[in-house]
Image (cartoon, rainbow, N blue to C red; front, side, top):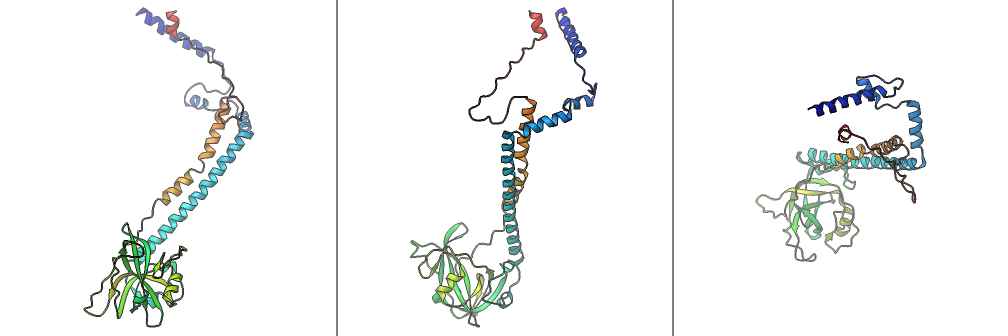
Length: 325
């Protein structure tokens, strides 16, 4: 018991002696929250700034600042790229939502100029058109997915009364044993027929040479070459067909509803933009730490140079160690 009391008394004595002999610094608060804040403030703000600026403007840290700046610019452009993709997805989803379930309008109202390309704002407009299918010019589009399975889409020109023709995508059929022998194609209706469906813009050419009667994509220019007739500047995805009363119409499988999911592009854009200051902050924090550590550099050392030796730390003597001695 007496031993514990002596240890406690000696600890208090050493603490008071340390406080009494501590050097006083001009402007240092005695106690309270101001004293805690002072611990994180440099003795001289002007001298501190000059020394930090000297560290930051060294050749090594200027190089790392340049790297961080390039990284920040890359993040800005990558964020803008992802934002652009997000805006495209939003615009497409809005077109589909506004047109997909709307009431159909006559083809001549939606496209008064047949040869003109379909404006993007009118894509997925539901229209009706009446004419006769040119079954002799039936075409199959290869490698088309439908509900996760690849097959063919069946295209047939619908000849209208004004002498023009509208390319109609009647639906999807599965693959056959070989590309030259696709699966059975449903019979094309004969006689006058009214088709209701959605207008779509033509697709870009894939630049592949295909056999007659097949296409690599729904490219309207390549389709015109095969049918040798004037086609509208858009094609139609069939929703329904109506022929003479009582006529049974055999159709391919309908195409799946278009996907309106916006994807992760908005989240990616925000992530890239939030990463813009990351490189600069890390470089500045590393430079400040090097200043606080004195001559111990924390950044990458020049090639062929060795790290400076650190001074050994003085071993602290604890009170109970002194008692044991």
